[in-house]
Length: 339
Ligand code: PBG
Image 1 (tube, rainbow, N blue to C red):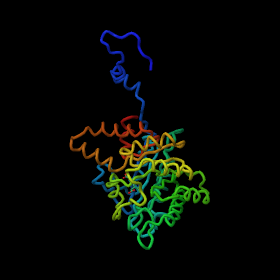
Image 2: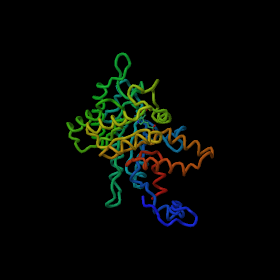
Image 3: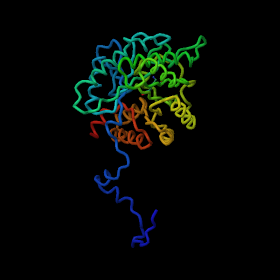
Image 4: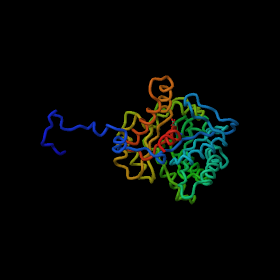
């Protein structure tokens, strides 16, 4: 830093407040700017619904019908979002999550309909938002775990990998651009990459949920996907106490061929996000999860915080911490504000 040799009469040499004096100055010097294309909207679609079902713990979010899902995907397209992330909820759940890779399973149907909606009606030259699919069994199993179970009830890592590879191929066939393994099984990225390549989907990308923590902030999501889970996911999702281990998980996923890596949740793990962003040579995503959404909505509804400002502050902070791609349930609303 340059030392100023002429000291002013006040004795104050440096006045950082000059750069905060007007809205125009603040805009000029902002280090972080959100753009609609940074944002990915997670969407839930439930088989057999005739009307969208509002989610009590996620005010403003719904379980979509197949029709209302397509409308939401069109809205995301028209808002110029970076992408959408689809979660499917089947009517029938079983031990193996059979509907997860069924060609006519709810998620595959939703992907096909979304693919068609995204590819039609775009202004010439406008990029098509990226179609992402959650690649995990928990929405499809009757025990609610992210994998299949052994006879003693433990989550069976290697048997689950076979299910994930099959699910990934089903999703790619249905039109997904990005496969998003969120189950935290060891070796999931490599296994899915092999499965996709063998099936002729070498161009389908993998967004790896690399540092995914066993978090209380997923609470509202469990309502959103009608989760059957008893207990917790602590034998596969990470301990919130561990930052270094998150870097190791990201390194492993990079070595296995992940095209993008993710840190999740976002807000309580900005340190991990920054560290992953500093060492990753692929784009880094962060997922602002259901509980982060619910807390700001609830405090805002009570008049305890300024909801809109808190929304923007939280998402801007995630980008400042190093996220290139941000999954947030506010994606559409924020895109409207910043366009
Ligand atoms: C697993 C999955 C979860 C979320 C995204 N993918 C739930 C979990 O791991 O228990 C949580 C997303 C959120 O809370 O918004 N399929």
